[in-house]
Length: 181
Image (cartoon, rainbow, N blue to C red; front, top):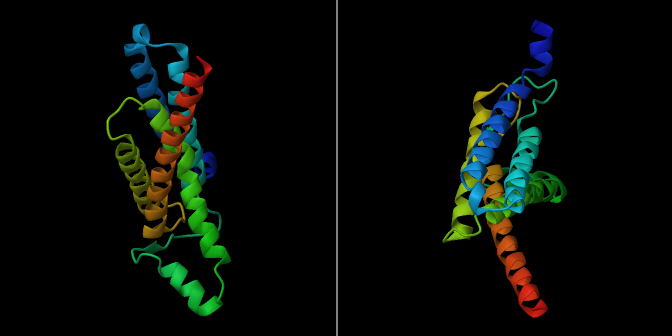
């Protein structure tokens, strides 16, 4: 039993997050069942899938690492790589990966919440809070992961980009529907 727990214990927080999210999403959809269509469930499901993907990428423990590191100095890793290595490949890839990681999540979240006022602000805030929760989990759980302010900043920026991309896609969709009539 101990071996099973050590091998698969890291999955438990991810499964709890996914289960709670799916229960919330399905109960939300059931409340509005008479008012919506099956298609209204798609953004909810895609949002849940993207949450699961983010959790798998960010909360999977690293092997052969005892403790994670902590960085509360914004862009310090970028500065160190610039000064000592004279190249930006790794830090830029890391920053871009953190931005891209949150774009699908907030795109689908914006699709789900498309009737909300101040949509971009709301999805950016929710993406930032989700990222903050991930950083807290990485700090408190023995995952061997780094708690990094840069990750939070870039994930929040990715949340903003995802919201903007949804607004653009929604605008183009409306134009196409209007021109089709």
